[in-house]
Length: 311
Image (tube, rainbow, N blue to C red; front, side, top):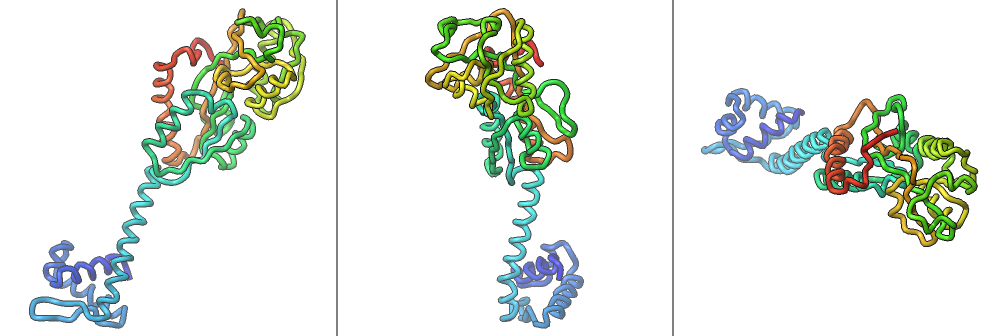
């Protein structure tokens, strides 16, 4: 039995006339009669009874019609669902992000805009460091990931620019330099630095170490932090000082202060990583919203994004 047989049957059942049903379907009356007869032969029952004005359903036909309508409805719904999924309008989008990425205004703007346009796509969030997120991306646990990377993209990964953020000094409120509005890195040469392990976030680690070396000293390694957001808490506990992207300043923890760096420009890039191929429609739709989110935030809050340089 084919779906067209069900459509033919229901057309005749609705019209109660084979000729009118044939006109509705756009086929000849004899072929339609043959298809109905073949369906009855396959089912082993009579579906219609002839009358002086056309045809009516038999008891078997009535029973078959109820399920036939459901089958046709479910088939149409399945087609529409498949087409919606093909357009990226339904499904699940798994988003990875570093602990600090959530504080960047472009990220929230992008996710908000996507949810407004694709409300039937379920979003799931997974937090991790850059290395973890790239591994999640590679094995399919996330579809896109906000990461801090510089230089060339890893194999099989494409990067879309999100923002270049200036770095700031974060230090305990009890630190002798806490009362200054701007601090030179050289003044921190004797302090212990709270850092992420390089294997967890090579870009951030290298930016901090490289900036310190440029300022004339090797940073004294102190307590390691599992996530960038944890750095602030460790600084508040007076484990040392550190450098963080400007957006992290939104983390208001008692016992820490954020200060601008004087004498040099230090910045770090935030990018959106995705697999190069294949790109499902739901992922492509998310990526397509990046340029507008970046430009909107840049216009509304230009000082938040340092566009003068990049890593």
